[in-house]
Image (cartoon, rainbow, N blue to C red; front, side, top):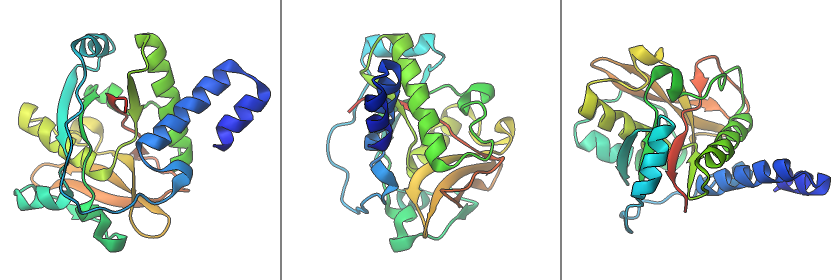
Length: 231
């Protein structure tokens, strides 16, 4: 990866570690070089990845106390189960409907001032936001003194399933009123050079699954990091 090569050339240990964190983020979201994620309609297989008891205790000290299991749901699955969506953007090969969420526990800090990475809107592109996620993941691992967990930018169905699970558990709408009806960018390609963003969860309507050019930013397009057991 170009960023890793530049860091190795400079022989800067911190830069190398951060570049390796970015490479890990890109690997986790299957978007190395910002290539489209291979589309799959296969059934969910495999075992759900879980945090250890020690990891949960360490995450809780960082405010990452809320953990939900994502179970490989697609947005189509969610609609069939009666979940409401205000809008779902068009996507090549119907990708947004059939892409499945990850099969893993996910930790978040649901406090509105902590849920999104600070200043991760500021007209940041997808590439810039992935670098922010990598830096957050690197710093989190250093504070936790472990590399067994990491922060990623998720797929669209990761965030929609998360929003529904949190609403079921608490009655609070992630991406709703308390969150300024803002959005998180995702790594799920839609049409052309755009990727999905999830947000705008108004009462009675369900969340919006919109899309935005990966090379553009927006004041309302933030990043909500998902902390997961490292693959």
